[in-house]
Image 1 (tube, rainbow, N blue to C red):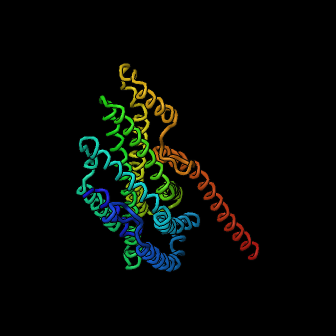
Image 2 (cartoon, helix red, strand yellow; image 1 turned 90 degrees about the vertical axis):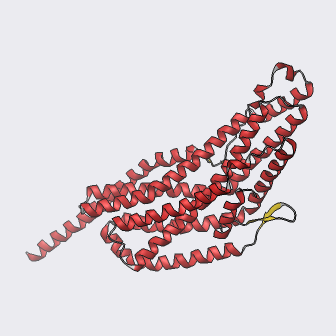
Image 3 (cartoon, helix red, strand yellow; image 1 turned 60 degrees about the vertical axis):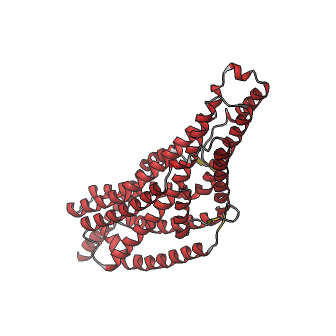
Length: 388
């Protein structure tokens, strides 16, 4: 049994994917919408519960910090729910593309095993590794939750505990979704590695034509993968930017305002526990996409290994020139509808934008302080005038 469907089934259960394997025809097809409806209904119920919780605790949060940060904190929580809605809807809308991508990958595997001495590159990812990655993700998130309880004394009530557990569960679900994207990327990279290695060998015209067809199918998978995951990846990148900006803004407020050092240290530690793992996961995901893109562009140059003797074959030379004309000057990438590329540039853009927006928030904070002090000054003057 192939290992990749394991992570697909995990996301099917979560309602993030709607794909199933038809054993009768040996192909993937679209699944039912039951789990999607359950996912949406479940998320709505949790969102309503959080809305009630937020309305009960809003004044306390704003009083403990400031208006700008209090509103940002509540907006961040709603963005987590929006992310779940987006991932679920995206899985339903782009299920056909995921099915096409999986069937293309299955066809490549079949061609490789049948015509190239049963060489199989799918064993680069084992079923055990997938389960280990998923279980590790769950355990790490639970440990982060325990650490939060140890360092933050505000988590005492049942409602605080339930809300924190709720966001921990949503974070774990998103991690499993990113895990699915990462395994798709790793699978495509393994196919490109096979293509590169095999093209370095002496092969006949028919094998060259077949390898070029396989390469075209691999590149088509890259396009399908980028389209199928572009919106959730973009939203996660935006959330990474938002959380980083918010955390730095909160630290600025702590250093400039009067805060209890012990509670401030605990709050900063809790931010680090939530944000740093998320940033690492997104960075690794983008890094894998970048490595796969580089491998795809490297594979486009694989024909340089053919010697002059091989190029004397007119038909072979024609196939190679056709391949080069089509691929050499066309950079391969995970393009998200042409708006951005899913690679390291996403992370660079996120972190380069943080400082700009942090400066804007600091200016708003200073304006808020000026207005607050101005109002208090006017009240003092009015009181003095009334007494005279």
